[in-house]
Image 1 (cartoon, rainbow, N blue to C red):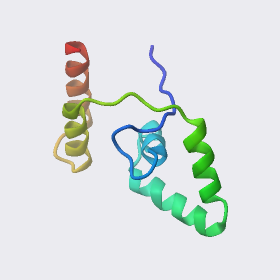
Image 2: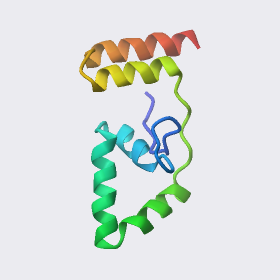
Image 3: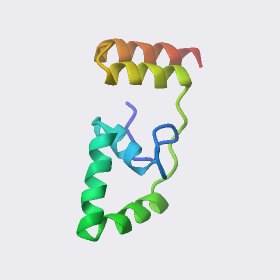
Image 4: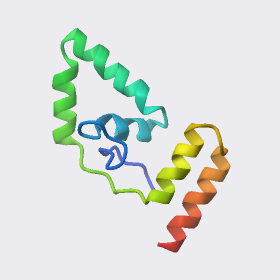
Length: 95
């Protein structure tokens, strides 16, 4: 059984991929994580936390463009979670 690892996102990033990686790990919208870091930055510790995570988290594997498109379609509600999982499985078996 494969275990998920917390990594920086190589595809969903604005600065360093920290928020995209955290969002992918917990299965939530990256925008929510980014808003959380902005709020934390206003409180005074968010920037430091982001920099530490940027240094500490390893870079994640880059996803294929087809997986990225499928994830975007899932985020927009165009496909179900089952369809997304099937697409990922199909593409991973081809590689």
